[in-house]
Image (cartoon, rainbow over all chains, first blue to last red; front, side):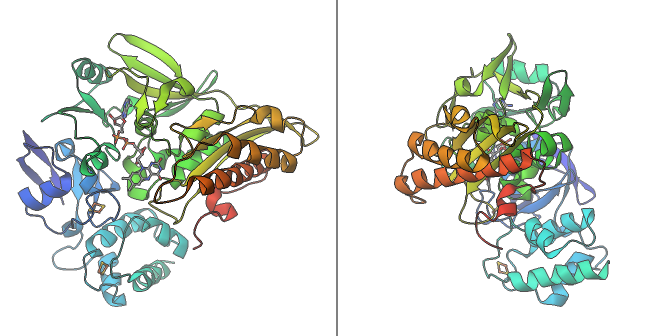
Length: 153
Length: 299
Ligand SMILES: Cc1cc2nc3c(=O)[nH]c(=O)nc-3n(C[C@H](O)[C@H](O)[C@H](O)COP(=O)(O)OP(=O)(O)OC[C@H]3O[C@@H](n4cnc5c(N)ncnc54)[C@H](O)[C@@H]3O)c2cc1C
Ligand code: FES
Ligand code: FES
């Protein structure tokens, strides 16, 4: 079957013949490789995308089920080469080590800041509870978002 | 593979009648397939667009929660948080924000894991499941629905469309406490829910206690109501702790031994009774109660 949806503001479509996840569909079929595949079981958040307005693990969503949906991945956050505020905050705080968790963290934090422009440290931690950083660089990640939260108050 | 997105409840029921399996959020089904527990069914019907199943509504007698209501909805809904707080406690503990955004109450109930978090709260709150197929509807008590780990008495052609909860008596409170080793993405080591109604003199007028992850299904502590009635919350909590440990039939696995589970489920049950009684008396204890009373890993 052909699955069509909106990806980062542009129409996207591709063939889905097997029961694959949205994550594999994005990476293998649509070559949008920003979202990372790690645990493939919803445990680590490296595949986080925003699906119809809520953050989800794309490894748990069936590709066939996104027909007609709106998906935002990490690739859709910058505009014309300018990083989003969340991306810029991570960059400035040096909150990236190997970078594997970074797309997922950026997407989850984008979702947080879209509902709450000045989250507390606890709210930041709760929002990122599903995102594992294998390099354990949480200190800089939390600081990046504390700074961003502080700027908007 | 056959995959259909149901546009209406009737379409979903028609697909189930010819052998399709429902997929709601997919957070159990897809993970189960990845882990090799059960392959993905050959024919799936997605029920996630059925908006008519995604509401929480107040009714003449109590409330109806649609099967597609997500944990994210449950944990902040005012009716749930104020009247059926144990269910909000449980929903708020599930997985991470991403899990809660797509994981549904219907999926949690029908997946029938002995460690499911919404099960014990639903049981103490007196919930029943509404099942529907192309041939008709029926109401099933939860104790009849769950028949074993991952097993229910529902026919394959039946969809759970809603969970109904009776109205709450005055001066009632409820709470769900689970033992966990970390604060997110955890499965209950053990868990306990309590519902308590207080008399004017502060003693307990009645209530119920149910346990997760200590038997093949969620179980109720049958004599909890009788043990608590007429007592002050402290004494009731102590009596319930012993009774809970007595009825528990836990397994030993990587995460905990049976002895440890049997002991700690009593501790969780006592804490659930305590929190439920404090809520019944009007004290505001945040959701989830785990965080509010410091159960689980510290910050
Ligand atoms: C990372 C992670 C963490 C998790 N943490 C927790 C946790 O802390 N506590 C917890 O309890 N669970 C947890 N879960 C399990 C899961 O998220 C929940 O059980 C969730 O509520 C399942 O809902 P779903 O809509 O995703 O179900 P699905 O996976 O879509 O369905 C589960 C099963 O129920 C059937 N089904 C679904 N809806 C219906 C219906 N309306 N009628 C009939 N059958 C139906 C499906 O066919 C399938 O067999 C976790 C899962 C993940 C991936
Ligand atoms: S790859 Fe999806 S959560 Fe880990
Ligand atoms: S920076 Fe390496 S996993 Fe987070």
